[in-house]
Image (cartoon, rainbow, N blue to C red; front, side, top):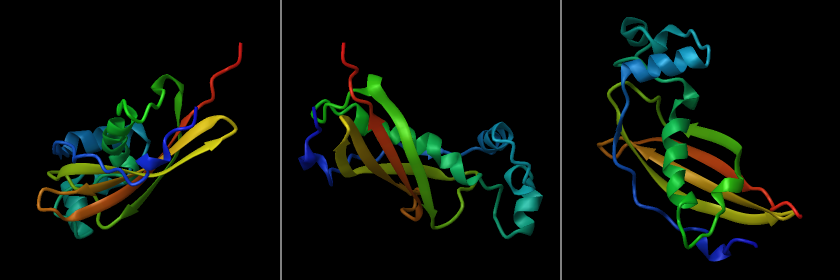
Length: 150
């Protein structure tokens, strides 16, 4: 059953702040195999003009995808999470994520469509630091696969 188009434009409350730690950045960089020293060495980061280590570009996926969970869990929307797969992801940065940042995410449903029985939901996550500065916008495409016929 197609999702309700009236949900397009719905914005969910900001998430509680997520504090970005050096160790989390290091672990993420290691997990994705990125050896750039600005991700693990504060002095290397400072040499490139950063106040502390910065996170790899896809680091914010973990907090923006979690924030998109507000959309997924919205009982009024009726998305069947047991059928959801991650369809796409993109980011537009205002500045790098830095160790010590306290970030919140505000999720908005940008589009809902049905294609071949699949429900597709595009969620925009606006990430701000505790001073209100925009850090990054993340777009997540969720695909709820069509139910298999018996």
